[in-house]
Image (cartoon, rainbow, N blue to C red):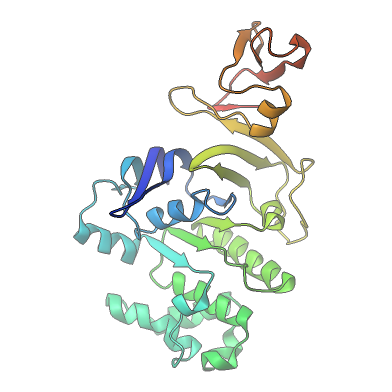
Length: 304
């Protein structure tokens, strides 16, 4: 569904240049429900904006289905946003029109695209548990209910890809669990690919895969051994997930900074291959050999 190789995004002004993404590599399969985590400034929201057609990539490759987002024209970009992708913001004000009812908010994008389907609009609100609140104005809805209206709106164009930027950032834990359950149901029943950007590590236990981004690059990913489908997962633990560092096509990988610090590796490292394992360690004379950090031989573009 999504392929990114060497994705670069540079923001420029007259006085400053900021590299938000510096060679991001990631692949997301059709029908996945996955999360992207990272500290503020890591580039995760920039990546989501590029997938949503809100920002243009500066270099590299980024494809969503048959769309090449690096080469897409402005006219094609409008078509892409109307028919391929749905977007959910953390800030409800960016999703909703305050003077309309919940149902009217869902119907409006259908009218604008020329595909008005009142029955489908009502069905979307039923899916998110708001069939009894269809005719309520937004000020009559709680924050969690407004966010569920936003989810319904994001599906109004029947997208293949749903993007959510901190969808649970402004709601309580109970509402967050409800929103995640909705995502799981939509992913399972509609087959829509869902990518969630979040700071909330408790969400990571409820999706199949988590990708960590650091300094504008993919640093590692975590595969859930048994992802929770009933909302019972409470956190992100090593017992529930297996961690991988991710290799790009050229065979480059990012070793977690904590590992390098523990081995006193800075700038240079020696590497050995014994037939089964790749050994990375500080150059001789800088650290003891027993500090070697084993990394298993690569399988399927990942190293453990």
